[in-house]
Image (cartoon, rainbow, N blue to C red; front, side, top):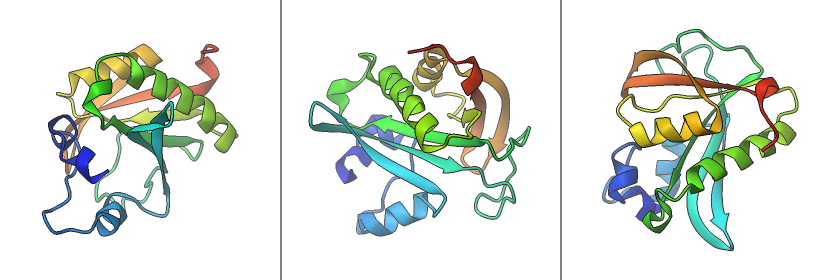
Length: 159
């Protein structure tokens, strides 16, 4: 994972470990007890990372509030393909579609999934739209200008 975080296509959009920072400590900083991370494999080869998290409704962790605050049946997701050999080939879309199906099993009461890519991350936004996420609004966070997007489980088609 450390190598992935140093890849230009990941480093541009994700926090990057400092030179001497231990990966375990770094992962604690970007995750919390309300975040569940997974390594993505394609035919036994690790190619990326995906996580889902419960929304910080009290702003204790993030220090800012999401617009249109979702209810308890909503989770957020973040992900990246770390191995650049798998970029721009449709794997991101497939990854997210499959993960949504898994989330439906892991979180049976789930109704909505949100993502908030940087508003300039056009590749990610296109990927989310292919999956079925819709644009909700733009807002400012500590990470910059984000595009809030949502996916409603009850509107999903069978993948």
